[in-house]
Amino acid sequence: MIGRQWIVLLCALGVAACNKSKPQPDPTPSAKASAEIAAPRPSASEAPPVASVPKAKPTDEVPSAPDPKRYAWLGDDASSYPKAVTTLGKRFPPPPSYERLAVKPGSFGEWLRGLPLAAPGTPVVSYKGEELVPGDNQYLGAVVALDVGTNDLQTSSDMVLRLNAEWKFATDQEIEYKSATGLELPFSRWLAGDRLKAAGAAVGWIRNAKAVEKNHQSLRAFLDQVYTWANSTSLIAHTESVAPDDVQPGDFLIHSKKPSHVVMLLDIAKNPKGKLVALLGRSLNPAQSFHVLRLGLSETWYNIDPHSESLLTPGTVPFPWSNLRRMR
Image (cartoon, rainbow, N blue to C red):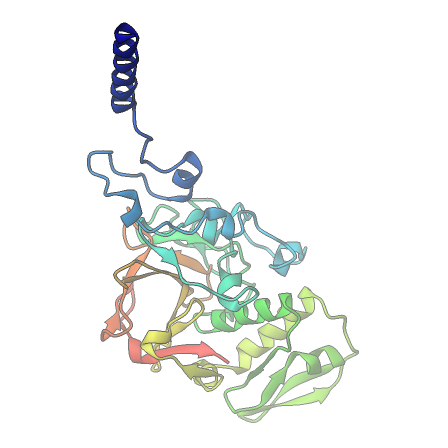
């Protein structure tokens, strides 16, 4: 009897020892979670506890392939643009510990995250096809796979109208802008056969064409006329000022005086401390490829602070944050 008690006691001690020496679960994230974090993780000895590291948005929450249904120029045989190979959101996930700002499904900000991009190394070209910025320039993050046009029309501030019009076209919204003189420029009048004609220093509508089908080629023809008669002043009149705490993807900064450059906040991400970073896009003069800026050879996301005085970008004077605008 005593011998049996000793045997039971020894077995219990053996089980406790085995449990004590049993390896604990690996605290590192799963392979799936690791794939969702864009940048390489630090070594195990350097990594903070998993619970303290905010998860980045999964890359499958942004479009991974260009979609001709949402970016209609991709299906327009008359458009000339570099081949689209990926999307903005896929190529540029947020930095570690940052998460993209929440945007409404179908919104302009959500649409921008799916912008089709050309292959790395694609240069910025003018409307004449001349190379303006080499593909390996340290400040060039990517070229958007979007046509420039064949005339010097789609310049810096006009790109705001182009992107806004493409989003509205994709989401079946009314498209309407203003000329520099305040004339309403609705796409519906163009489709009905009305055309713009100079009247001295002003411009007016006349009915001198047949009604045309609503398609992307019609939209491009209409936009070229808008570019001709609109300017940065009429663009500002079609927008609203944005408070620093309300900044969203799709907002833009503009120089109100000539040269009227514009830089757009294509995407924005935030970390647990409230710091913001953004992907910036622009198109300067002459009319040229719309492109994503890069902070330097190692980083594309810009640190931004809408409460500060200005934002500095390569090749332009600083953009005052007081000039932060949003299309109505």
